[in-house]
Length: 501
Image 1 (cartoon, one colour):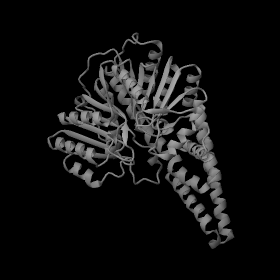
Image 2 (cartoon, one colour):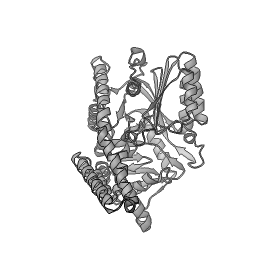
Image 3 (cartoon, one colour):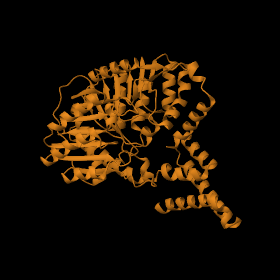
Image 4 (cartoon, helix red, strand yellow):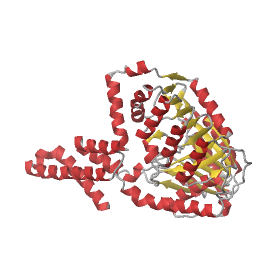
């Protein structure tokens, strides 16, 4: 397969060379290169067609290859291939499934009576368990952490208490003030004999200095990069570990939208106030969060760390609600989180409230939101008024007319940058985590979310959402539809590119 990829790369180089030096080599050589390149493009188009991808993705790739062959070849080589996913991630998925099945047989997943939940909630819980293959916990305690100040103050306190191990996994980790404060604690704990495992995504944290990491390694912290930022011309760069996981002594876990960086504490003037949501977890559900981390760790290092001392959390009192930790990624063809989101929206009886910094849905999610609104449900989307990335911001706006047309209420958050990733159904069911409502989170990134049903945390999420609405400006359909032709063109162009990923 590598030879095939190399051939495509060579073809792309030849095709590019043909464009810029046709006259130098002469007409015959240029014609040969042109024919060879055309055959390469046609072959790739056929391969994409036979892969039975999403129709919009298939058409976008074929259109790009047809209209801009050089650019299309480059982007396909960088983002479009599925061979790495099939070759590497199928094995990871098989290993992860065996672990959860083994724990289930060992009595970790105990059958629970779902009669306290309404039929819609029972159906959702059964579906989520079948898709995610992770246990539903009724003996867990969750606490919503609103914004960076509350999140990092709680995190620092728990890290200081660590006595046996600290496991940390982030997409973005910066060597700034908050990053250094956490680093100092990790170093201090490692020197004191605490097992500290630190994993960061090589792409998301590519600016993390080697000296920063070396200082940790020298103190005894085990440091691992997920993927490699050097693999720019390999398709694996497209599959990123977007998870944010911290587990302390197997008893306390953290999950949510915040990475580690001063901007998450609203210290970056470019973003201003940073609105985000995180969550702490205690009790049975921490075990699932722990296993997700340890399986990621095993995938990168080969080290197996599944001893009882890591998987025996102190159980919280049964609070009547349900908590499920749900991993999702390119190693699972079930599109776990996307399908759970879809089920939540389509099963709603009263309301669908959504907060996301990136809104690039596929046809299923877009249709489910439209149908919910046309059915008379209260459908609201909370979206940032200003972008951190222009391409997804423009692409997101291209989906708004279809929603506004059927009565979906869209609000732009004006107090600062909105980074919360929330979906709330009927004020009783919610999901919080790392996944955005976009195709990258659905198909490419490794994500992790928590599904909450009738827990106290759901009410905190609802109240936070209602408070956020006070700092928004609702989009007026008539005004929004009167955008300048240039703006509409850029939004449509960005949307055209979104399925390519």
